[in-house]
Picture 1 (tube, rainbow, N blue to C red):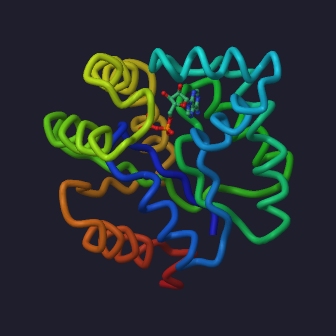
Picture 2 (picture 1 turned 180 degrees about the horizontal axis):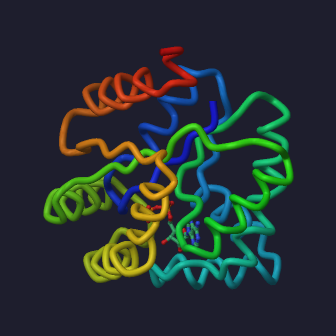
Picture 3 (picture 1 turned 60 degrees about the vertical axis):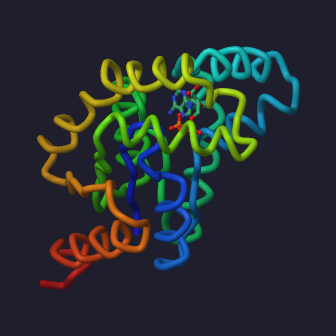
Amino acid sequence: MRLLLLAPPGAGKGTQGERLAARFGVRHIAAGDLLRAEARAGTPAGREIAACQERGDLVPDQIVLDVLTPVVVSAVAEGGYILDGFPRTLPQATAAAELAGRLGLTLDAAVYLYAPEPVLTQRLLGRAGQGGRNDDTADVIRHRLQVFTETTRPLVSYYQNRGILLAVDADQPPESVTADIEARLCGLPVIGGG
Ligand code: ADP
């Protein structure tokens, strides 16, 4: 199983990524977590990552690719992955497609999780109230949502054009979202066998 989750902040990428990885027995690759780990390591790239994450800006593509590529390659060797939060820009999507081509594989599906913006904002502010991340403040949340709309949402058409987009309503309880994703995946020729 090779799947990617395309979703605005607060849509539940992390939760669904974990659930789907457990369900299909593949690795959950969370771009934000890997970048936060690199930031904590305090390397020069790590310092740039920390600054971008704090502002809610995207980390430069080359840094993201340097961190993510080896992880994706090793997950492929172990049977697949659920990519959560990567790719997030068109150049990242192109680089990911080139990498897949070099490895001789294709992506099974790109799952787009959508929810109304006020719902996303409320969820993120709720997480902030429970001692969440330093980018879960009202201003930074607003900026992250804007970055999603401007830079990441164009990937919805990119994957739609490639015929692998599954759009799923994320404004439901987590179990229902997982059930919807699984139902849609069963409809795919390769996975559903039909
Ligand atoms: P959220 O989707 O809620 O913003 P993430 O943990 O996925 O949470 O991402 C947090 C931050 O990490 C982003 O605001 C950005 O700074 C950085 N980031 C994560 N994935 C990418 C990516 N693919 N490209 C660039 N920056 C990224």
